[in-house]
Image (tube, protein in one colour):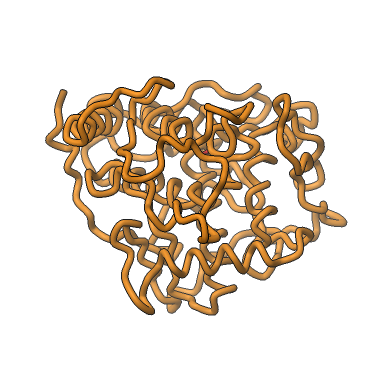
Length: 344
Ligand code: C2O
């Protein structure tokens, strides 16, 4: 419901700002329905953060410039970095309400809404970034934590002088530390080879053996009037959630900010490359085997969310709009699937 966005339920000791809703539109008439970009737009190819081009073609450098431009916009501008970050707070901390069910918060995690909501999120973030850069072919690089060469925080994000840096990350997990996709708050101290092997097995289990059906991959149905969080899909639980947990600072921040808490995770610029990779795995899953197909249930297809576009217009986007990335004018660079042969 575009007119219903109220106080979020934040965890104790949350860091400001405490409100996460944009200024509401005067009426629902201000909301426009999503339309696909013009097919003549350049195709934006998302490349891995560890190999995202060089010189004038360096998408990590462009991402840093775009985030600096977003941070420089006034906080009242829906394209500003803080308002982009707050979208996550609004949709995951009880501020947004279900249309027709004002007492029910909308929660986009732990259900079949997870992949399409986050696809739309990165889509609009990327278009805002491209517009601010004046570079229509800019694409958000993906943090390829499922590939051995991508299993570290990309160094650009760890550079304290970069607009992509975030102070609220686990200092023990700065590069060159390899990510642990099985992280449960204890350091394993494996060699890099052992850790990479363990990570590949986890991705195999979550993408292949554990996800033969849409309800297992995407998560359980969540319909209007439902209380929410009926059950997450395999990849949402891990690696996705584990990457949040591993990146946030559980050592010294009360709610494992930034990446480890719903309200704050998108305040860390690493959120966007992380979600580009998560989104890429949806494409990989769908293209890899019988039964790997999206739902056809109209309750899924007609579910909708609100985002601001690159011209600061409020857009209603449905799950149905988010199913064909070619029509959305982006693609993923081919990087291989080394975990396919990593059977446990
Ligand atoms: Cu809305 Cu990575 O979570």
